Image (tube, rainbow, N blue to C red; front, side, top):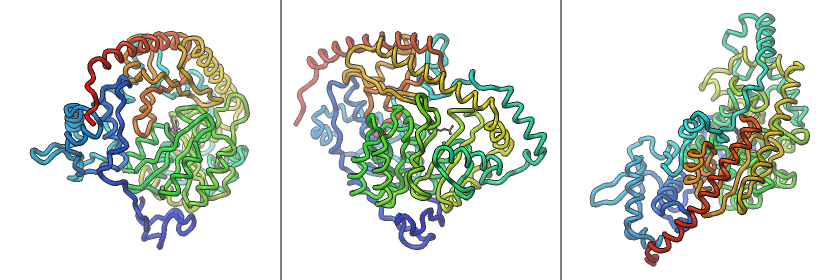
Amino acid sequence: MLAGVDPYPGGLGLTGGSPLTVQYSYWYPPIMDLSGISLDRNSGTSLHAQLVLALRAAMAEGGLRAGSRLPASRNLARSLGVNRGTVQKAYSALVAAGEARAAVGQGTFVAGTDGSAAGILPPPQTAEDPDWERLARWSARPGVISLAGGMPDARLFPVAPFRESLNAVLAKEGSGLLQYGPSRGHGRFLEVLAARLKERGLDRQAEELLVVSGSQQGLDLVARVFISPGDAVVVEDPTYSGALALFRMMGARLLPVPVDDHGMVVERLESILTRERPRLVYTIPNFHNPTGVTMSPSRRRRLLEICAANGVPVVEDDSDGELAFDDVPPPPLAAGAGNGGVIYLGTSSKLLFPGLRLGWVAADSQVIRALEAVKRVADLHTPPLLQAAMAHFMMTKACRDLVTTVRASYASRRDALLQSLEKEMPAGVTWSEPRGGLSLMVDLPAQISTADLLARAVEEGVVFAPGNLFAVRHSADHRLRLTYGGIREEEIREGMVRLGRAVRAELSGADQRRMTDKAISPPPLV
Ligand SMILES: Cc1ncc(COP(=O)(O)O)c(C=O)c1O
């Protein structure tokens, strides 16, 4: 947390003492408690790879802290009911990845006691769990259809009208737009934003708004103000991978709450808040990334009630909120929360142009002041020229037309994807049905591992994002995310033909593998 900045001095009951002496009682789970780990012989992923992921999750969440000694391989093997060699193989993999170190005669320890970055950096991915870079490389191969990235379609961007806006503001405001500008944001852009948020039911004054370089920066500033290493943060599971990476990098202890067809399962949050004092609850209530679902009105009310009662600020990420297909965009959660309690993040990236890096935060004025102080240190301000041009463009007919076109195009692509899934996927495969946003989640039969499926899908010429990229505990090996914003309907249809082939091939391969495993697996050593 930023020293000396108390975002809610006395206000939400989060911090005791004066704004300069923030008191917070940390809670850590017992250091060596690995009793939650269970390995699945039928999952299709090798036991040692499952154990690597489980240990890594325990490290990322703080349960296994830097310097902790891992249980002796013999003991862990006995309690898990696996061969000792399986545990030794998992430990060796962690050592090879720099996440653990082996001391001769002493055992294996979680790395990072020397103050190195281990434990702060996000856990490296394994071959079973490919990272974004690899997905991007596969997606760029000629002939490959990629439903992996959540980018809007640049072919829809109207370049000429935006150039006119740039010229218009430069002609009017001149060199002032090329000078350093205010950290809070360009005055005209703040006015346009305030009016736009008001249309969606969020009435905020200028002092309650901050322009940021994309909502990702908004989230980063919030994390820097609110989180210290070891602090607990509640996140939906699954959730946006950029938020997971950020919170992990900040050393936060992640408390996952599942998501169903009605958004975050708020009842589960209630039980967490009886045991824990998280610093933040991070949610994506509208057109959630990756599932595409929207939180129900009753859950929204309950979420706000219980967070207010417990004094926990909610961070609402509304990055896809305006990308509604069937109706007007749902109101932000913050609209039901008065001025305090919700820190709202918005962006122009999904409906308009992500390359301009224009986002905004709406929150209590004290929070905004704290975030602005951090922004000043991070990058001074967001470019005034781009803010002024965007403010101008947002008032034009070209912008209104673009919004209509974008919503209609993505809605048709969503329809094409839903129809193709229905046509191409075998029984046992299910998926979410978003009413806006850019992605949906597919659930595969438990015997399919997305890591194996992805390798086969790449051979078939189609790429998706494996569910584990969005999962807190790498527990989504049978899920995958598909995005439909950046590709045409015919590509979506062909992509699903290829994915359907890969899923069917994996299904028959997994059946065969299971039979072989049964024949060779030793009985558990309990
Ligand atoms: C849920 C969510 N939040 C935040 C972001 C970051 O968006 P930006 O920084 O472009 O506003 C993204 C980008 O994909 C996202 O999906």
